[in-house]
Image (cartoon, rainbow, N blue to C red):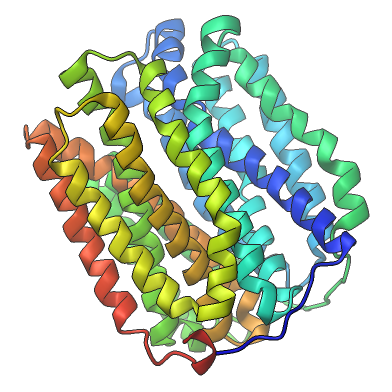
Length: 440
C-alpha cells in the first residue's frame, strides 16, 4: 500500500506537543502514587484494603469520565472540555495537597480523576478526527509512546518525590498542569457542536455499571454482579432510547468490539507486568522499590523513542500488520521473562523493553484501526470507550496478579499466564484481517 506523503504543519506539531504534555500529566498521575502508598498508609494508619482505594477510587472515576467526556464532544469543543477537565484536575490536586485526613485525600484523588479522565479520550479523539488518515498512525504513535514513557517514569518520579519531599508534594506536582492552559487555548480545536439531547439515564446506567464492575474486580465480587445487572439495564435502555448514550450500531460492530477486547487484554498484561515485577525483584534480589523503578526506565525510554517510528510503519504498512507483529513481540517478551527470573537484574531490565515496545505497537495500531471501523459521527464515543476498556484492563491486571500471588503461583508461571492471555489478544487481532482495506 502506498500513501501520499503528508507533512505536519508547525501548528500541528505544537498541537501534538500540547497533547503529549497533557498525556504526561494525566498518565504519570496514575502511576507515581504507587510507591507512595506505604508512606500514605503509615500517615493515616491504613489497612491494605483501605490503602487500595487510593488507586481503585481513581481508576473508577477515570473509567466513568472517559466515556462521558467522549460523548460530550458531540455537544462541546475539545478546547472547552480540556479547560474544564484541567481545572477540575488542578482542584483535586490542591485538595489532596492540603489533605489532613484519609477521607480528604480520597476526595482529592477522585476529583483529580474526574478531570484527568478527559485527557486520554480527548487526545485520541483529536488524533483520529483532525489529522489526515495518512499521518494518523504517526500521531497515534507519538501519543502512545508518551503514554508508555509517562507510565514508566511515574513510579521512579513518584518514589523520588515522596522520599525527599513527602507524598503531599505529589499533589502539588499534579497542580502544575494549570500551566498548560495557555497552550490549550491557543492550539486546541474550538469547533462547537450542538447536539440537543444528552442521554443522562443511559450515562448513569453505563457509568454505574462499569464502576461497580471495577469495584467487584478489586474489592467485592457481589458489587461486580450488581454492576453486570446495571449494564444489562443499560443495554435494554439503549435499544429504546431515541438518542442513546452509545449508539446501538456501535455496540453491534463486531470488529470494534474485538478492538475493545484487545485494548482490555493489552493493558491487563501491561499493568500485570508492572505490578508483578517489583514483587519478583524484591523476593529474588531483595531489591528496593526505587531500584525496581529504575529497571523500568530503559523500557519506557525505548518505547518513547521508537513510538514515532511505529506510527510511521503503521501508516506505511497498515495497522493490521503492526498489530499482529506487536502482539507477537508481547508474547515473546513474556516467554523470555518467564525463564529469566534469576538472571542478572540488568539483563531483566533489557528484557522488559521487549513487551513494553510491543504494548506501544498494539496501542498505536489498534487506535488507528478504530478510526477505520466506526463512522465519523461515532468516533468520539468510540475512542472514549476504547480508553475506558484499557482502563478496565489496568484494573484487572493487578487484581489478577494479586490473586495468583496469594495462591503462591510461581513467578515464571505467572509470566507464562500473562503470555497465554496475550495469545487470546493475538487471536482477536488475527480475526481483524478484513476490517478494512486501508488497514492492510
